[in-house]
Length: 140
Image (cartoon, rainbow, N blue to C red; front, top):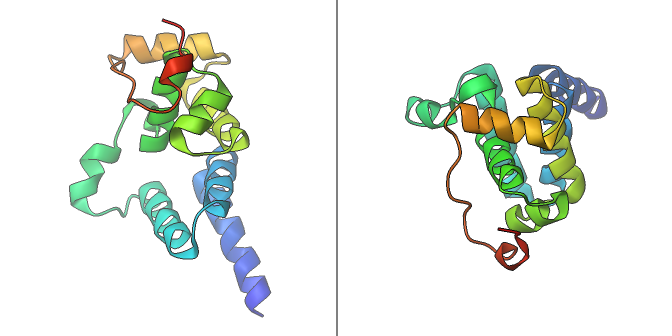
């Protein structure tokens, strides 16, 4: 009975989030401690359902409906980092970064890193890349 309920809830989350966001969130959750995974899942679900606390809603809104994590990924990609470097910077797997990029491309209606970076610049979302372990690998 619990397995059926779990499967039903997983499918509901998949529908609510969309395939790309669900895959990214699932992969990222796999790397978290159980308490962290639950908090993260609730944050994503609240965002998707529009039930996030008011104090967080303003910071979660962005053009094209990108999540805060997607904006982080996009900002690093626009700065020229590879998927591996983005994964290292954000402590994610390369597969999670790829899933985020697929979701980003879908939301922006683009099909390449260059087009996504151009979109970001057009919307005034470019800014400094946060310091991190891959700074020494960045081509400037």
